[in-house]
Length: 166
Image (cartoon, rainbow, N blue to C red):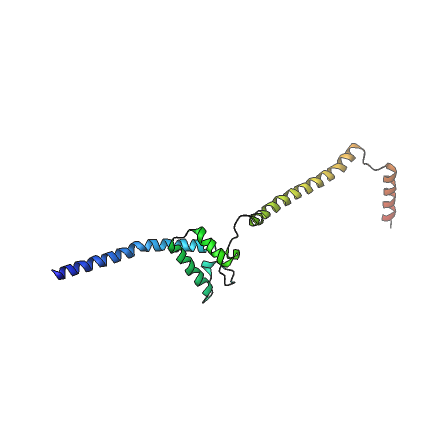
């Protein structure tokens, strides 16, 4: 009976350890996906100007340590806000791959749109002015009053005739 008990105990231990590995695999995959998602929001601090999860320097110890720290925080169950604030506290705001959209950064995010709108309005205004200036003399000539006295017009014609004579 002891051999049967030992075999049953061995079978129970083997099944429980394999089932634990099977159940922990999706949790671990979720943690690594979450870590990749969060790590994509940070820059590697080795001055390579690459996103943390995409740093491809051979032997980069900075990205390795940052990724370990990130994996540890994800495994602990820290929220994304907690992880972000810890990285910002350790490395400063230059750790952001994309600056946060608040405060002065919000102004920097909105300025291209503002400049585009102002430039469009300026172009529309300039075209409107050109068209209104071009339309005025045509209307004045059609009405008979060109705004130039007949004497000045005759002087200009005479001068043109003199200058074009050969």
